[in-house]
Image: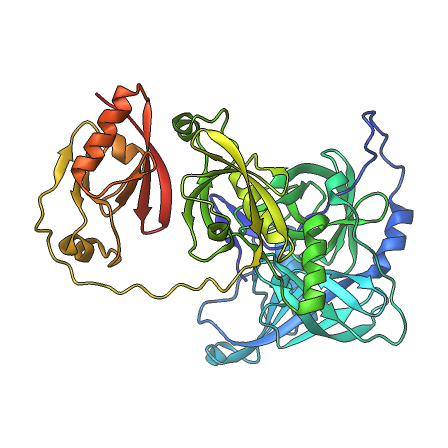
Length: 505
């Protein structure tokens, strides 16, 4: 898996480490040594090696990126050649994938043996191991190496790509040393943490640092809620544990941000509070069973909050409800703002996605919403998330519209009622209703709000519209009520969203 470029830095799937400190307000001195704690934890941390056969690229294999003339450049060339014959190193995301070339350049394009090295930790003496899914994804064979260099073949009990977690099983001759999950919610910014893993395939390595931040969203997946740490995390630490000072696992090292592939003090770990639930499901069912609400949501902005009469911009604005889903059965509607879910306040929209996914299937959950200027509580029965594959869109031939557009110059757009011609031009669904935006003036109000030709205005102030006259009427009513903005429900290629539009005279 290759590094993902984020701006000018690399997002590398190779994780960080965090630590729990006392919860008192007083500062605590740094420990004199981590040696005793490290010695007790190292036997439960393993190296995970996965291999697969793939067709080699015609591109030259990559080496880890080092500054020109760096002594590490020659060091790693020598290291890889010494441990893997004449094969070159191919950086594959957590920096620990090696291509085993079976010949010279004339063999390029033939199947090659790929090896990925990562980390993991034992959570059950019978041989149950936790790691990242990306460490073993697509593997034909997985080998686990213990601290005493014992190697054991592993099988996959279960894995999940969205949470990036996997559970492996080995069959040892005797019970293995194991560690257990701790309380990641109790860790605080500034707490000491210890990271143990397999950086660059060198074997068990220990680094120390602090919890740098909580609740980080690094755009890695829909459930991002990472612990950030400055403990040195490098490629190959993926899947390794992040310990607090009590020796509890409070995180699973998963990603780093780095311009070169080496640690710069920006490592990220999946909190144990989330991982424990998923790991339990993988052990029981072989897959993660996610809770499902059946809504599309978006962030509540200050403009939207003002339009809806909300104080503050907490919550998740409902921009679509799945027919037959749990939200629909609970009578949640487009335009509702979900304020709390199962008693948990939603200070950020993305929190809803995570807490719903973690909720037990068939749970009866109270949901507080904001509707028509007041707060009310609904009861939702959480279902299991179904497969979310979407059918391929049918491409319609282009045909110019025959219906003239109405220009709203104050807003910088032109609109027309949905008809067959516009459905074909903008590839709209046969059942699409509303007003189509046919043109947008650059730098106008509509463009500033992200509206584009082909977007369809479905509702204005939570009332349906079918013709430009309906839109003009709603705008006039809003001006008469002294509103600063109107709220449009807009259907675009990416789905439904609410758009606040300033009212102009």
